[in-house]
Length: 432
Ligand code: PMP
Image (cartoon, rainbow, N blue to C red; front, top):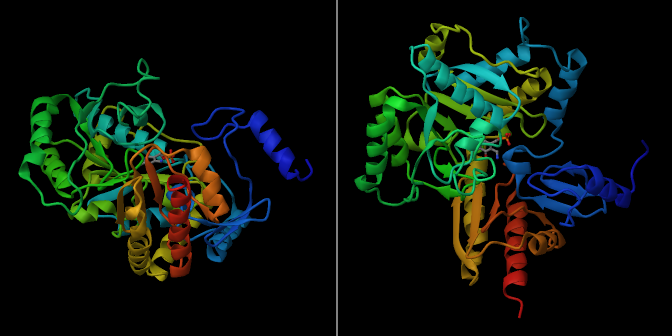
């Protein structure tokens, strides 16, 4: 097929292509991207946008990175893919070792899969098989309300029961146990009363649970809320007492985004099972990983199946693993901590003026995540084109206008991003 004109592209897109959480043939604004470089997206009409979304948390080193391109090309000249059953390869083994080295002890074993949602399925299956091998059938999980863990069925079952698609699929998804979402913010003073509900729920239900699954520190899609680390210490203590696998979904937070390499480090503790995705392959090729402790892995091994029952076709895809391995090296070479710290400072400064807008309910920043919470649900159709007019790419949802820029963003990029965000909100909300 020859190159499409801009109009042909939009027409064919409307006719044939589904987009995330969207209607077919929708008249919502759509923007065609032609290329991307560093922190900038170049649209087909020639306009350049500073990317504030890192393509949904993934492109931490920016687009078209020479080192990542090199890793991808070199690997493609060896082999783009090979099945992982009965075969292994260096990109996967090296990446697994890197992940074990950087992740908190006791995470020792790595299961590669293709997407964050599948990494969550795998984590939940691990917990279920852990119990099966101890002779018990357990498949229920405790989680927080306002969580988000993906779009596959088990992952959906632990998403927020109200906003998380449960009503549409209620007959098809498992009923989980929900605790109230954390209320205290990461920098609030802790009150022990905050742990009482978790204590009661686990005291009452622990015998029927296969495990506990939460997003540590940042509840993402469920509200972009940064919560107190003591909720995690409480869960860790209770899971230890009741011998329940504790699963942390670090798909959005992992690899530095919150200012710690893993968000669980804010609470100085580790889960038994941890999910990684998004950032893992730096926005190049879809890849996810579920890590677990030897305790979990050995128990599964001793069980009736003796093997772990999952094995996707594209497991440990060599291209994705090669890029992911180089991306982790780059994190260290680029001094990611310094990068994230300067983004945090720039976002705190740059987003502060938004607090003066009447329509804004709250502004908060953690690491390289900035959130402007509006009082009312934003009108995406109206706001999105205005962001684009101002030269930035942001994709708000609900009441949240938020950004998580690539770690390579400069002070200048960030000040343009924040300034344009403010001006766009001012244009929409302060127009007379
Ligand atoms: N868990 C969390 C915390 C996420 O933010 C996401 C992605 N939005 C997922 C799981 C699912 O990942 P994916 O979209 O790659 O399936």
